[in-house]
Image (cartoon, rainbow, N blue to C red; front, side, top):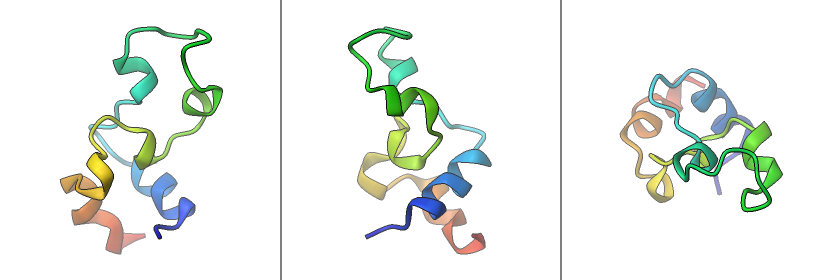
Length: 63
């Protein structure tokens, strides 16, 4: 299991971070999980791909 703190640190420094909530095009609505609007974490990003994100894989050792 991947540590939540690691997911946050990598995402906060990621130039390609794109929250799933934004990518869906709904903005703030009942269709989005409120957590996904407030948190910045790799697993809430469209590029996450179950941990296969190349940015996460390349940078996780830094944090």
